[in-house]
Image 1 (cartoon, rainbow, N blue to C red):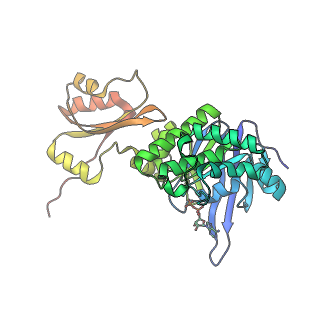
Image 2 (cartoon, rainbow, N blue to C red):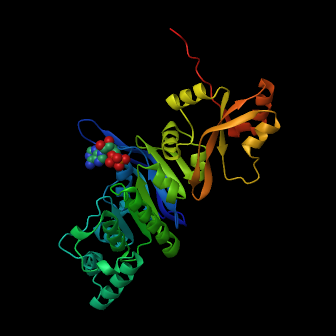
Image 3 (tube, protein in one colour):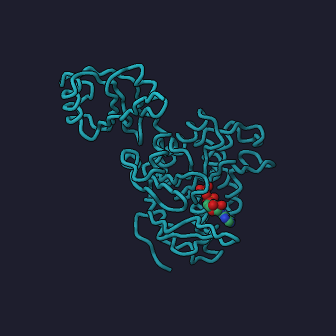
Length: 348
Ligand code: ADP
């Protein structure tokens, strides 16, 4: 058995998975990255990108064709069933559809993994009480899952996943079946688990908004390949693939494109300029720079929100004034500014 490097909760090394069949499917192609201990790492990509396959290799439900995956330094592929079950006891799992047992109460669902682990009745009772309190469901202990809302069901799923105090929590599309308000609640709970318990969380999602709100690190998969990886803010600010750029645009909605741009350009004559807003209090205010150079800026579009609790987005101005003044202002704003090239309306 090979041992992975320290500080890593999960390490994928040249991980590849091919499903054979009439047509071979390359679900994972040479994927290498590390999930740092104590991080909330998101794995994102469109449907079919290989996310679930990747996740299933972490707890040994799927074996890699080539390459390795290490969990807390142990190579998963080399483990037999007995050692796999020891490894799995240290990994909590939450699911899109909650996977609660309908015939057991809320308390019974949370208690179940503790029963399987052979814990005493007194120990189970105490732990279930703590967990119900932690997820805010003490008053629902005796209810059955059919009586719970989606958000409550997911909180039960989370409490059950935490029962044996795992160091690693795998969240597989955990908010995809929830409405926006409930999604907020569940994401806040996951962030609290990471902060207060120090649990590493590996989040599988197709929604960049989930990554934007709770992850510190992100891995982007596209057709089984890792096309972007790193600090969430850095990846949002400088995506290195078209797949990532598309995901960022969908999550931030900060720049006008296509029809919107054409509509704005018709209504507000001038040079249309988008300017990135980043986490830099010392950067000059773009409107102030434009005015100082003798331009007349008018704010016509924009979206500034937060990525990893830091300001992120862009604002779009229609800028009027002498060409030289516009050019000088854009030059001062440097790479933060982007001048939209508007296609001429050609009359047939
Ligand atoms: P995602 O979770 O990103 O939607 P998956 O990991 O489920 O992607 O699937 C990646 C690719 O592998 C898809 O083309 C899928 O059809 C294929 N795949 C997944 N599981 C199997 C399997 N057991 N047998 C054959 N092909 C599979």
